[in-house]
Image 1: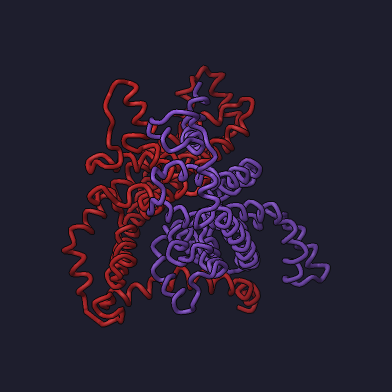
Image 2: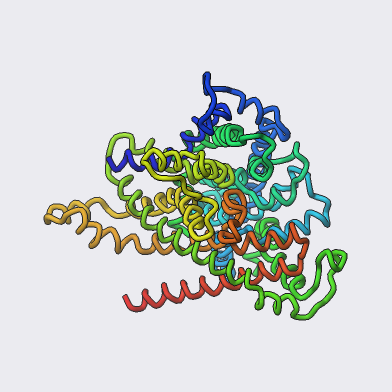
Length: 264
Length: 289
């Protein structure tokens, strides 16, 4: 009983959007005869400007490149932090925890200034720099916790075999980190997929928009007479890829979140 | 020091990017906050002493937004902790299909805030949204959910609670699952009921998880932006505007970068004060125990 209630509460808004997305405008306001069902809303958002297909592709490319860049920076950094001795390690760790908690929307103005100076506005892949930067604290903390949990014998054995630290990172630590990299990467991907304020201020050309930026643009302009049908179609199409990601990878996502809580 | 050389070298690329993203803005904002930099100055920065800060102190809209942001963060995080705890307890009970249920419950958290804010705008629409249709079916009139300065902020809280409770629940579920089953069994054999197990065993051991979820959610809720931007645009009559959306408005709509930077520094200082109070409180309660 409780479970059913929980499920309704979690899914109701989504299911309602699904229903709305197939209704004609007149049916939404309780008028009109004939069949209320239509695919018109989907055609509108897919053929509109920006086209939602293009938008989803932008978000996917940005998310994948951001994830790769973040992991490439975070894995060596986590390994270095793990090896670091003395007072630096706790100080840097504390700083990372503080940064991971911080509401990053407050940085948008300075980041926009950087985009102006270096001419990065409207370059989709330039967004990977702030996105990776904002994701790094959590990623480093998660990966460091995972390195900490590796059996120490393995590295000792590799050291005795004459592998230097770089070789150990490449051939021993990185392969063993694959599960932690997967769950960290998923969290980074989700964060990049969902980020709004920076995308909003960096991107203005409609063929460069990411999903959140396109949502913002749809919300502030109503080119459609009763725009809620197309809105709903846009939210359904915007949710679907993520829904698949969550359902397929839920174990990894939850283990990433949980690690963050336990080790942070 | 030589032992630390290689580790430090490995960290340099990440630390450089972190410095640009997390440290440089504070230097930039501090500098901007003592300059006039707006349309009036042709977007050039001209030193203006403490004029931005003076304006901040006298700016009723800043104080109103600070109050509204704190109110939003306090109320929504309190609700999220309560409902998150309840959800975690439901998910903790062994049953068939628990994994699927857990994944479905997590969905609101994973979806973009912007996407679902748009969804809530339709659900709360007056008079055509489903919530108003329900009110009418029950024989009442319609209610202007998003157009009533006195109550609209509650519906912003509702949308936020819907979206972020799963996150809190998953953190607390991890806490519940870290408690050895034997302890629960032992209490049950003693004849302890569900409530008693919760009070005597689960709640005390969950405290660090609750503290962590509280700190993280408070900090994030304090920076609420996406939801407000899309759901209400700060309205009606500024009654749901947050500090972040005010700072955004000053920078992007009014092109007043000096004042926007001042607002963001002030927001940061409020958040820092709250975090230090929280840390002090945690330490104090730790000492007492």
